Image 1 (cartoon, one colour):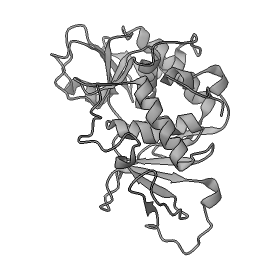
Image 2 (cartoon, rainbow, N blue to C red; image 1 turned 90 degrees about the vertical axis):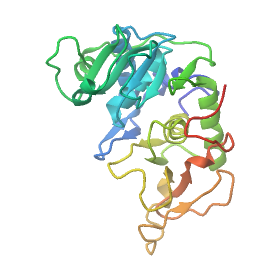
Image 3 (cartoon, rainbow, N blue to C red; image 1 turned 180 degrees about the horizontal axis):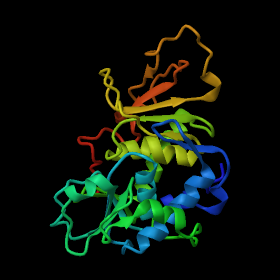
Length: 286
């Protein structure tokens, strides 16, 4: 692995050494992005969001489930900010929300607190007060100074509760170990990104293992009754079972439970998160 052996914050996974030409991300259209693009673009996102006032102690709302939204979350994390994925539209009383990153057409639906900054993507803003994220990612400085900060710095929030970097990375590392996730494996997300368990299983675990993140498509999460989760496919398993049907993906109820791998991969519901059972989509941690 190119990342540090025991990373403690998300920033540890975005070092210069982590850049390479290996596939790291696949968007809903099937387009692949390599690890070099992912790291460099995350640095650009951080540099751009810094201009909007993102820093330690503030919250950034991020709307969307494509590569640009993910870069908004990564850039915020590099600046020690808190990421609020898919926040509610009524944010006027959320005084710690400094910036909102959202598709341009959705920005007008959100009420921000005084001084809140709007960052739009997916089109060129006509309102000069709206920051153009796409343009910023193109023109920003493609480098970022080495970052070190307290692993107990909050990473994710739902507006009232937070989860820190250490908790998220420890959970991701436990999942990697339990299912033997390896470089080149593909982790297909079939769950909403605003659930922190999705971030652990579908984003952080692949980053730790140099696996490939496959972002959810328009029909994710699955609608076949299995519930939200991730599907892990190892390259060596693809095409081995020619008789396997489209629904042959194995359901695994616990990450450390029995599993059978099919040609379509092994499926892990969000409940398999190796932090024990949770009572709500947002982890009940202090």
